Image (cartoon, rainbow, N blue to C red; front, top):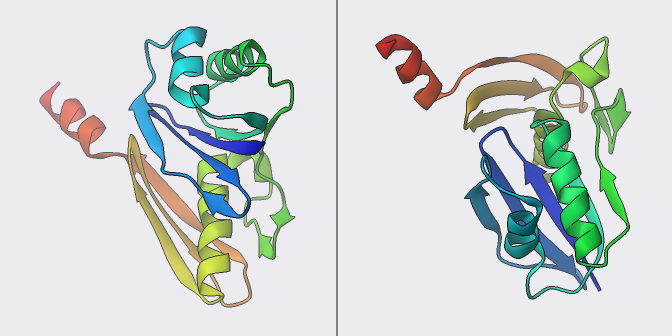
Length: 157
């Protein structure tokens, strides 16, 4: 059985299964109007999932819909990652670690493990974020601003 890895953003959901050390092709779609059946069809169809590991910045409704889709697919093991003070060799700069979006936290950990050096992580989606890590794996802080679509919409209105 595989693990289903899910990233639920404000606009899009991304998912891929992980089995025997291999990551399957990623699926991605906008999820704003999805029902639990849509979640099930898009993320669970054609895959034998034993466990779901998810990160979300989209709130409780998306968590509930993913849990319902997993249960309808026979999967009871659904875990949500959260931002912590430190993990996997990376130290969070935020005094209240949970205030750093879990998407940013996961990107920092991934970048650190890929580079093992000082680096900058930039993500442009619904929001645009920039975070820095020093050579010792310490998060130096970052910025979050509206992404391109939100910025243009705000300027036009």
